Length: 196
Image (cartoon, rainbow, N blue to C red; front, top):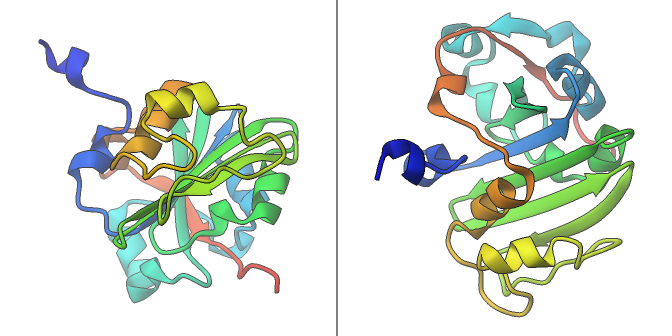
């Protein structure tokens, strides 16, 4: 087998050392528009490489109240990466970002736990997490049922370890590679705190 045959779209997160992150993907949006819809503080937006990120934000890179976020594109999707926050999973953010498009968000932390959300046209369609047995909620929690089953995410059962990654790959064809996190400058900024 070639590496192309065995590589899946999100293998970076199966094999990399990322203790906590939230990824938000929006179809056919520019990265700047995605960050704007997520509530980025416009005064903090700039193109930054990893050194600039560290210089500009220091220890605040992992802040959970006002997370630092960087953005880019992969195929037809814009992506936003929060290394400390979970803004991308907030229902208000999902509704706003998904206006006129669709949004996929996933979160991982070391509990270990994955959380997943899918929104279309301002409607939060499906959400669940893997802290307990899979229990999809939302306006149409069964919409992704076939993709979820193939990924080992069956309602009422414990999730496969990388089931959420497999779901995102299978249902949406999303790929995210180490090259997308290389030293090239990426659009980045700080998200404003979520409203109370």
